[in-house]
Amino acid sequence: MKISREQVAENRQRILDAASRMFRERGFEDVTVAEVMKAAGLTHGAFYGHFESKDDLIAQAFAHVLTPPADGSASRLPDDLKEFAAFYLRAAHRDDPGGACLFSTLGTEAARASDEARHTLTLSVRNQIEKFSRSAPGNTDDERRQAATGAWAAMIGAVMLARIVDDPALSDQLMADTKEWIDALS
Image (cartoon, rainbow, N blue to C red):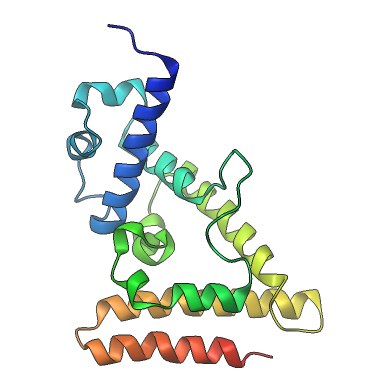
């Protein structure tokens, strides 16, 4: 039975939604193609109609999460550095790795991903630093870029550390201290 282009696109969207969530929750190695397809409500056999391999799925899942919507609608995330920090450094973000920033959930694994996946990440990093540089403190473009880079790296690291520790008070403190440090940047 032939399915419409719209249905193919909808199926691909469901696969990418499922894969991106599952990869962020469990990592690449602990997620199988069969599990992704089941979560998307499709058969394992349908996978190869959409992707060449699991590495291709990983790269496409990265692009799915990191690429702004094609319809031109605005991202739900703030572009302002301090507003983003307030959004990012919250318990709800820390406690939902499947829906959270893939840099804080998959950063170390992504460093070993395919060239295509890493290229997608590289483009996103450049874009995010450029956006944050517009609102970062500093008197020159270089100073604003450095502040944006340092603040974003601190946010990612704080969330990673907050997930690692087994002390809830320390976890909260790591994020609160990082947010206060970013708020104090002038």
